[in-house]
Length: 114
Image 1 (cartoon, helix red, strand yellow):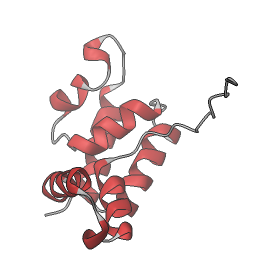
Image 2 (cartoon, helix red, strand yellow):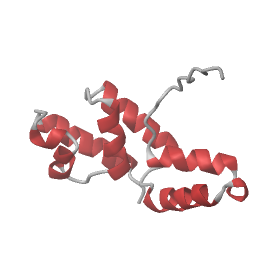
Image 3 (cartoon, one colour):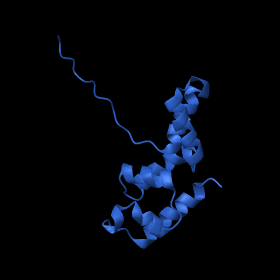
């Protein structure tokens, strides 16, 4: 029996709204039971649309120097205060200027679904 090499697949962090958009593109009628449950979850917990989520992650990484994982988690939860935002930044181990934190909250508030 031959050994087969495992194919390396590119890994990428996705926000909840991005997952929702992917499942919408598949079509609700084509989803299996598990995918339908995930779709229901994403519909319930998406706090921005997919395009805004992608843009927010890019800005949090590019302009504020966060890593991609932190940025995705912030966009998924959309904190409303500096105190809530600090939770995602290493529990206080990562030092970020208060003005940057306030700017991040302002950016999130501009794109939050009402």
